[in-house]
Image 1 (cartoon, rainbow, N blue to C red):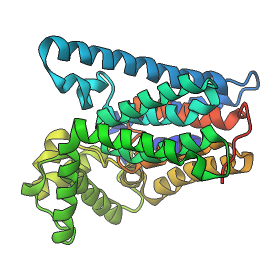
Image 2: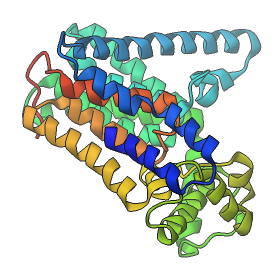
Image 3: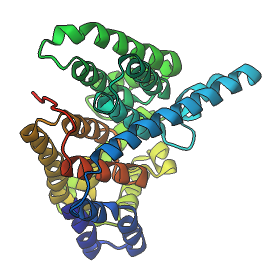
Length: 340
């Protein structure tokens, strides 16, 4: 994390937009300070962080579902029960990431079986009704991990009924609340394959096609700038390509790469991609060495979301990721957890 923040500092040397670079330093300051604070000898705050990560998400979802039902009862409006309406002040994809992490840490935090089952169902419903495509992609393995850890057995068949039930709840709630978004994704992928990956600006009218467009632009910049465009110039360089290609959807929204590997590559080139990859790999190897299922699951969920979002470009992402990795890596699990 400190190495990635160091790239933020060095990247200003070949950046034209200094003010934007300074703002990036402020947003990502957690990558520098959280690891240093976590390394201070003292009490193990791992359990405190896990407890707060779980119950803050649970209470927030209860509040948002309650508010949505109230709006539906008195205004007959279902928008408050899915996607941005349910997420409130939190971006749906990030809230889905928090909920997926809360689901996989649930067995370590809560022992009461029936209460734990209720909380798991609430979290799965939350991920589904948020309708985030990245959230559903990460939610399915989160369900598998939760069910397996709950049974604490090498016999996966014992967890199968719970996996099927929770997966059906996740997919069903996602289809019910945001089915059109997933149909649009399938249509976008089909069109992309038919055109062999080529796409014009006129076809970019949705979040899925917009994401594919920014991925293409990001890959082009990485190919041209193997050391990146600099800390502060990512947005203006991408916007220049959007303008050139007529991708008004991405230009109007000033979209970032929506992929943390591509974000690191556009800003810092291959060194950025390597440092970000090394951070996740180090977390997984530490989890494997300690047989720490919670840390391994956290790394997996972060990596899955990082495939679809530049999760270190907003404090709602960088603070959560840095604190989770630092505190889980610095503390030991309260009970044996097996990673295979």
